[in-house]
Amino acid sequence: MDNTIFSKFTPKEKKFFPLLKEIVEVIKSAADLMLEFVEKGSPENAAEYYKKIKEQEHKGDEISNKVFDELNTTFITPFDREDIHLLANTLDDITDDINSAAKRIFLYKPQEIPQGSRELVLLIKKDAELIEKAVEELDVLKKSRKRVSQYCSELHIIENKADDVYDNFLIQLFEKQHNGVELIKQKEIMSELEKATDDAEYVGKIIKTIIVKYA
Image (cartoon, rainbow, N blue to C red; front, side, top):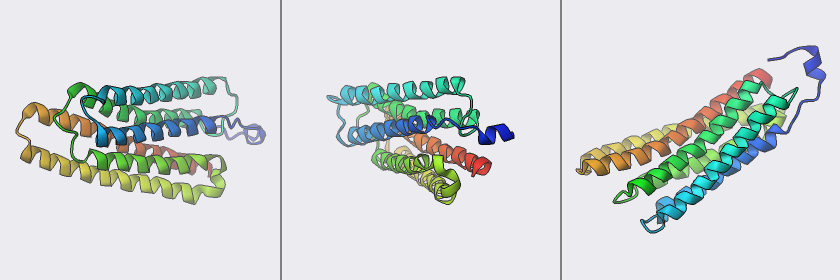
């Protein structure tokens, strides 16, 4: 981190905050589509849902790449370049996880959408809401550090809830599913959704690191 007197009085580019907010909007859109998919998905509409979620994944990649490009051309950044880059990439990872789950439903064509998937997607949507609140206050972090820290703590709580949902799903799956191929299909779909909550929790850890450095 550059703590020179020069850096403290040099205006810092705030263009990264809108870009981070755009990535969060992509997460929200992908999560909304995924909720529809697990609620209304069928062999007939699976390709269409996957296509829509894949479009959001591509959009997230484009914004994340733009953040990287801006980091390479910006003289003074509001936070460490490494932290901004890591935050943008991890936010994008959440959409990647959602897309990966949708892809597996589309390709594997499970006999049924895994039980518990709706509950995990609802937790992902809650993650997105908390991340949105945290990102919206990053540019005034010195005034809002307690609120932002609380949002990050709630992300950890949600991740624990997601672990419970996933563990209970596995217990039921191994007890009741006797078709080995179907078992693997459903486990992989749920694993990708659970991974999205892990990445959301990691977003909280990155933001907490930023708080320690700057707030």
